[in-house]
Image 1 (spheres, rainbow, N blue to C red):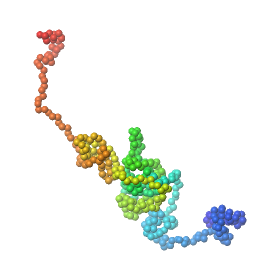
Image 2 (cartoon, helix red, strand yellow):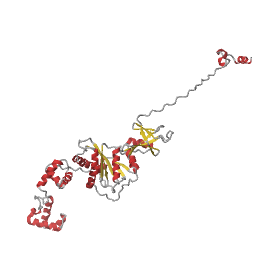
Image 3 (spheres, rainbow, N blue to C red):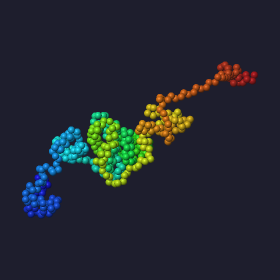
Image 4 (cartoon, rainbow, N blue to C red):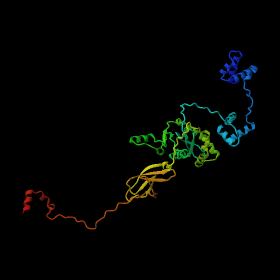
Length: 424
């Protein structure tokens, strides 16, 4: 007997002794009067045995056929040995082997092919989801062995909407500014410009403490390249001070590490380009159909990107000096700008934009200049030699009686003697 059946037995014994009524027994067991009456009739006829469930010890009418169960377990061991029951049930259903994931879980545990996982108790307070789609989107990078040794370790850039759980992923070599910009650009193309991003404190997203302190002392705003792009689009970046604070994207990373790795193995994909094609075409949409939820409010907080030049937003911007010869040095290379006048440039600064596709744009006073890369470092022109006159230089000579020609002793004579000589 189960615990509840034993409780029924004790209560109905009291009814038999007329200590309580059937209605009171129903209230004690939180059941209906009709249910209590039916159980009491069985108890009166068969005793405690009548309270045991009739189906106990018998095979279920909905049980799978023994041969079908054997085929499913063999197929699981052959192809999906390290898959969890839920994912394995999805893959088996595509092959025509329909089985509920909980049924498969019980079979695997019985065959010792799967172990129960202990659920850890949460130690942080739960935060309610945001109410609107696009109100807050969490962003993070997840380095992992995505190709299981078939290729080098790379990083999954992942975005998850806080209200719905909608996700979008992109594989890149590392968690870089370019990778973050590419993923945000894809999100904007698909959904629109979100109101805010929730990121960790990596210097890809926010400046480090030293840079921020220097900028604060100088009265300027410290921004990373990614932060500058977000500011130009009106996206607010919120810093998370722990992984648990952005737990939604962290759990989504775990889902990717479980499902994407196995999907790449089944599709025999071992390069980033093909993996990103799979992510864009089907994988992310399948995850969203399965795990995404409806937001509490219908209003979408995404803004349209129509009319914005996203190519010039998602780029690397740096200021460089412009020489009098209209030459700019960038990336250890020299570029000759198209002269805007015969005179040296009035402004000595030019904004260099490096686009994600590798193109370089040199913006001078709001206008992109035509340019070409110089094959080598330019040599400054030598200064012109001074013009030498062919006419000999005239050197004046003092007269024979000039005071300079007098002997030194004569110069020391008294003044009156010199005056007398002068009158003679």
